[in-house]
Length: 148
Length: 192
Image (cartoon, rainbow over all chains, first blue to last red; front, side):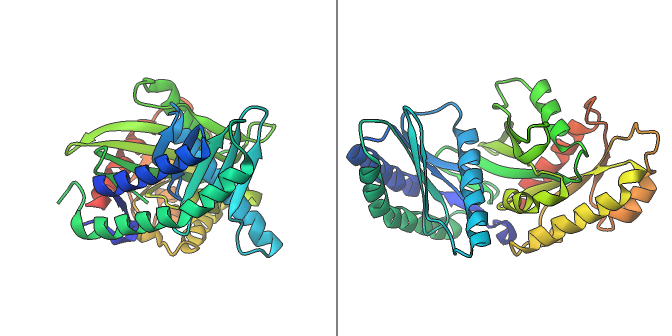
């Protein structure tokens, strides 16, 4: 039995497989270099495309950067910002908030455009959110953690 | 929020080092980074101000062995101790699975320690969390200071909950691994 106070997220093989299929589909449609799915406390859930050896640090920093925009929104009287974009000379990053409060991070270069990334990512966010929610629900019922 | 991954057989947990400014939170992580083999720890990331004070957080990922066939991965974070950075502290606490309160043993920091612990309780409450419901340990750092308070005094003022405490001199590493071992064990026990 998992401690409900710590509300652990259980990642099931079936759930993560379905999420990875969606991320691969998004990567293929947008020609992004990599897509990173990050849980709201800073843990990475999945990465497709070019892998990075710094994936854990990337996940922590993405959540940190996006969280700071949440605080900016609060100070400005805005409910929340839903996306964030960073433009570099070779690489760009587009971050989008999911309904589940997790973050999808798309890393892309000159092979595609911001418009394409925004459009396709936003079309995919609901599906990915739904999969995360379904996985949380099935995980809570079907798995008791390694200490069953 | 602990993340239990049945696909990769991994457990990911988040530990946050909390406490007053200049109390030794970053020094704890720096010591672990220096002592541990690169095979079990990742790069340490520090978001600092121009004068090397923590602005947002420090981050250090560690692999701490295997429990019942699951690899255990811990993400260690520090919060910025300076009073004015409360918004950052609150953000870093989000999803924490375990806490280390790093108290500065100096008598001159007595009130700051008390205020910082109260601030930790308030920030946890903003996420609907209660200190008694999350695994945490106390570290009394800087035990080598000439004006260090006695452990009995510190316990009386800061640890009425009587969670495990550790005396430390983080700069030389004393007590650092014992603290990490205790909190990581408490977090894994808390998942069961």
